[in-house]
Image 1 (cartoon, rainbow, N blue to C red):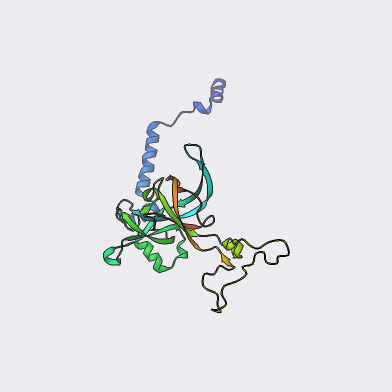
Image 2: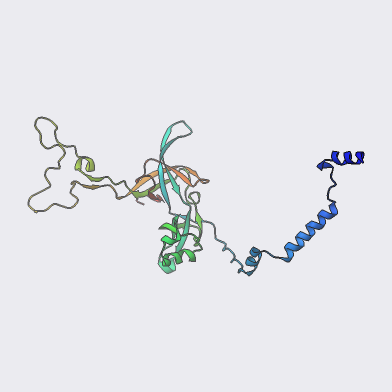
Length: 273
């Protein structure tokens, strides 16, 4: 009795007999049979749901005359020769083709593209129908048309900056300049101003507003007024770098608008374009 008791006390949990492999296989088979015999709710829902429509095969992205972007700010980089280059950082795209203009139907070839996703509740039903027809699940905030230079445009295509532009290309950028409020002629037009000493009482005033014969002020007369907040296009800007993985484009020089403003980057096809 004492020896049998000691052997039972000395037996550890590790010395307990393990479950035979045949038992484990039987348990696993029974669980598999139960899962197969009782389908889950998700499986029933998937079986009852209609099959998803196949995705349309879209042609390669076309080359447009421009894209929509957002100004992020300014910084500087160094070129291969160690010279500092001031650049403006733009987030260009991804843009999506919303509608296509045909020459036989509309009289010209262009593509309407959209930029920056927006919540569905902020879009009315007619515009939402246009996005749905283009195969876009999420509506877009900013829309603009650009000419199709090469390739075939189709609704739903995703267009990135590397599809349209290349490094070293000369472009023109259009944006809304910063609003500066009401300003005088010295700040607004660069007037020299009057003398500041010797008893002068006219320092920054425009003085005469023109001839007295017509009894009116001519149009385009430089006078104090609201400054800035206008549509401005800067030509002759060079693309220094394109970062496709982040959708960024670095352009040499300054671009109109403040941080976060929308800009339109377009190819400068000719000197007058």
